[in-house]
Length: 60
Image (cartoon, rainbow, N blue to C red; front, side, top):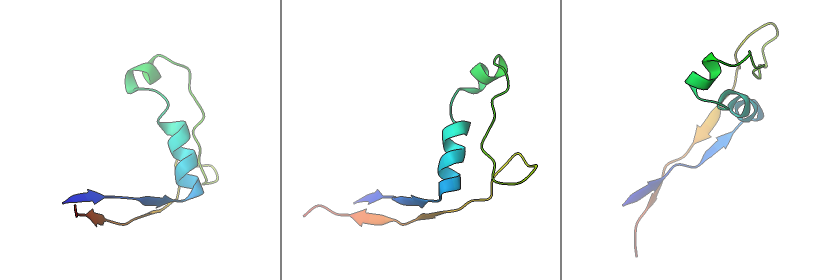
């Protein structure tokens, strides 16, 4: 039996992921600072959520 994990993401989670996962840690160490998405005034992180459901798939 296989499982599938579809997620419903909020807009803030999607925007943060697009700006956070752009380069490896080694590449980031030698590059200039890059602005990350934040939805907190004066902050460096996000407040967000996602919903995950487990679907179990079985062959017929």
